[in-house]
Length: 104
Image (cartoon, rainbow, N blue to C red; front, top):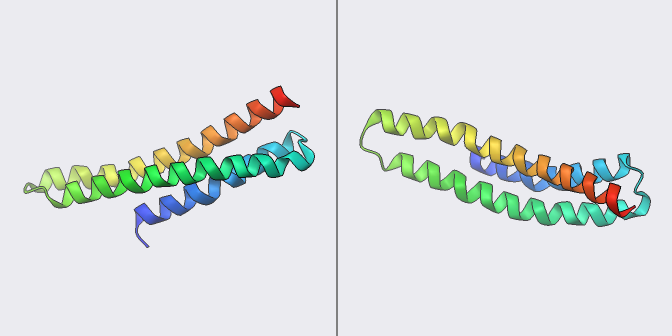
């Protein structure tokens, strides 16, 4: 498993977990299941975006003829998927918290 696939899995499982954790901490009760499904939708979309972006950066780095350009794109490959995955999980937690507070 490479970094792109690992960040895809973290996003896929992290978004529903964050949604469920926030919903249960806000005392949403049985509606937490609904928010976990909402988090799963964001997780699927976010994991697709992370995977696409990761492989785009990885394969464009492989096509570079200069070593420094490949190295720069490799550093981007190391950090940008992590930033996007953490952003998707944070967005899911924030939206869930906001929805629970304003709906319930």
